[in-house]
Image (tube, rainbow, N blue to C red):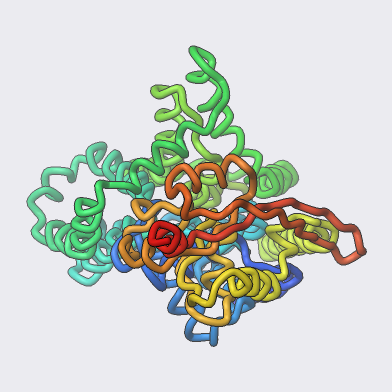
Length: 488
């Protein structure tokens, strides 16, 4: 048994190292990662997309390692490792040690625990926080200790401060509670209210920030939820199936591995215990089912990546409800297969990094920032304080310019409430647009103060010399020019 525990540790370490190193083949961080760092720098209690926790973590880590891009890949793996460790700890509440080891290891056959993790974002943090929340809830529910309830409350607060869909886990736990005969006893338990108070205390400043800023983040969620192109009746049918199908597809390597080993070995008797069975069913099925239900009722699409943290109990559920006889030799082979999946995912990701000409992978961010600074310097002697652009170009300038530059995303002060609108309109800005329509919006908003756009061609070259070009527009917002013209 000790050998299997060590082997799971080796698997965790192997995955951590591989996914911390392979993404270094990229020239640039993902857009989500850059955005999280910028949020952490400027957004104290909220953003117009998500709550602030991912930004706090990202910027603190980025600053700790001297503004190193490469360190951000390791940050993602810290949360993945935390998640798998707590999946094992939670699985031990329902399974024997060997089964729990394999249930935790099985997560590495799910794309969310490998291929998707180089993009540090709210979803990667959720992979760590959801199992932790569920574990301390179960401990509090079954052992009723102050420490467990307090940790549960704090983690619930952090989970919701990370991403609002953390509420899906609370819904799942709520279904479990009302299905159990202990519900009245739980309602009378003062420790539960203590946990709730801890969560509310953490969330209160963010809720106040939302109130002060017209709940802009919820408008973003609404826009993202309308991401489908199917209309009328069929949207209610297709989108739930599409979302659930995506979750099964992303978990296919894990599901196929489990099915193969169960087929090859003698099946065990299924022993279901009421309370435990209900908890596993609720946490394994309800979060994803809730997303599908929302699609079914609204007829709108849900992003498949919203299911990122929803699969944390799938391994435990499989070994609990569909057990098979496992000896040490079988368990060791099972872990070997998971090593193979980590390797294959990493090779696929590495190959993508080598051959792609995508700007999200192949942008020389330092050189680009310097180039745009020179463009501004040729137009005016005024210091460059703001860049108005989309998230990608705006955050590149914010992170890699030679001095502090603030990103005014979409040139909209309303969407960037952490900056002073008066200062922006006095200081001017460098403008970057990916197409004419975007630049036309800038001119419509600020009129003659926005210069005529200039074209620029960017090149993105892969490791084998293949090049892709992209044409963008740039210009300047210089309100003082309008004032000078009026004076003349």
